[in-house]
Length: 204
Image (cartoon, rainbow, N blue to C red; front, side, top):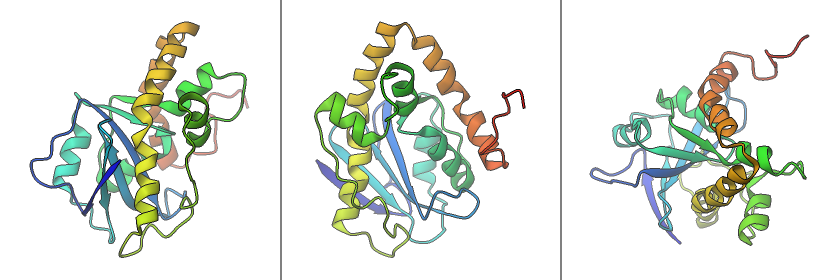
């Protein structure tokens, strides 16, 4: 594992592959209150690129260009939140998407546990430490422990996608999963506009 750390944007000239794992770290989970602090990316080569926003300066032209590329597939775990927070702070709608949590829920129906740690343990035999999950990501400087935590959130997503793709194919749910992935930007937009706790498809 290798971690490359940047402030406010990716460096000029950095090109990553056609399938990009992405995650975010924020001050909290309230989309209206808590700001974006970190975006981490990996193209599956064992290298994590961490972009730290110590202030609310989100100009980041190189990062935005990469995220907005419609030819790059973005893999996320619980994409609904990350898509919403990136849209709010960077003005980018991520697409096309693959959400490992949604894929897991569609095929691992024998459990109600679909977190990243559980998926890595069961499908990859990897134990992830979640000790830095609740920490100050808005700090002026990130610790080595924080950087390692951030990296682990993206470094295994490509391998998880391979495992989950095989299970989706086996269960005949590839098209259903794709339809769910395609809906994520709309679900994120509903969250941003106040419908986060409302199921608009319910009868009530």
